[in-house]
Image 1 (spheres, rainbow, N blue to C red):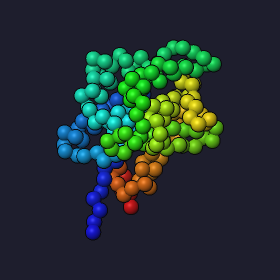
Image 2: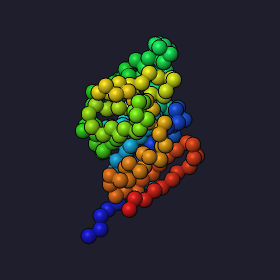
Image 3: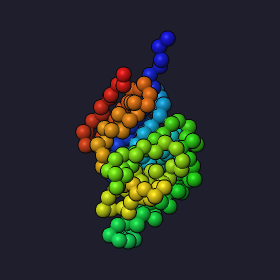
Image 4: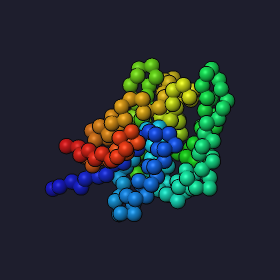
Length: 193
């Protein structure tokens, strides 16, 4: 009996340019390519979480490139504390968009990656509250203050090689994974065994 392969979408970092992920999701869906689960790091974590929770591309486009994009770019509050941007605005914007939802509330499975600042290792979040995990994944060192989750400090998941995200997903399921990276300026498909 053959198992149907699933498409996992791994969305990498890239700051505001990472919003290209919205267009990629739109094109996949326009071509009837179903996304079975998402994972992300940095801005890819936010896009992946939003899609996994709401599957509403119109709202996602409006929030990132449409009339309400100013709110997205207002994430960089300039309240400096201890040399870091405090991150209160980022937290509030994520709360406004992603509510108090948990990973269990997603319509399709979602996970995101942050970096444990002390251990220097990636941490995959796939349970609990979504907002702190996504905020941790977006916390660029020297720009945002690290995010404290259960007495551990996390920063941007893109610090550890972005391709680890694909490997993590591939180990969990038999999938065809698509990695979008602005660094490689292209798409890379990786098939798990």
